[in-house]
Amino acid sequence: MSTRATVLAELAELVLAAKRAHPLRVAVDGCSAAGKTTLAGELAAVLAVRTTREIIHVGLDYFKLAVEKRTAYPQATPESYYLDSWDNDAIRDRLLIPLGPQGSRHYVSAVMDLPARNPITAEVLTASEDAILLADGVFLQRPELNPFWDLRIYVDVSFGEVLRRGIARDQRWMNSAAEAEHRYRTKYIPGEKRYVAEVRPREHADIVVSNEDPAAPVLTVRA
Image (tube, rainbow, N blue to C red; front, side, top):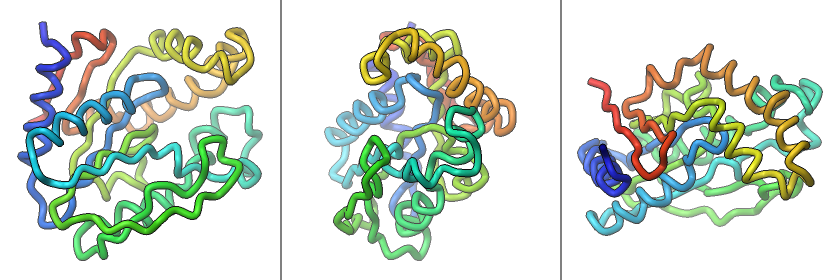
């Protein structure tokens, strides 16, 4: 059985082997509570030991649309969550394209605070030519973003585990476990099931990390 340290080491080698003539743009995709942010942070730490290249870790929850601008669908619905919560234009134009072919390498790491109530005037940063971007978030292989990734990692867990972890993690800010369960059952999980059905991210990712047991994840590398 794979240990987490072994999988992280293998992931780091796969990332380092993916050469580009511009900063490497790595998507760490997956459903809510799959462990994307934790995995990306741990992978960044392993990479920092193994290479002198600049490692940039960005959480794409800082690229959400302002809550008051989410008007296409009722906000409690799966459609609002899936189709109207993230500022994909900003992710593309202010982060991914600048780090891609012929890009300026000038990027920002955030546009909104986490409650998505207040814009952030983020410093414009300049990535080194061989930097590695690890960007974690949901819905990263949607058509609006998919062409701009150089490597796609999908962190895979069952929806039962999404529900269990989501309730445990989010009940405090959602005021109760019952409210958290309601939101996951009626909004987040239905939206993510639609993404999985339409985009098939598990099948199209370059690397899949089965993270049902975080202590012993399983790595699958696509040909």
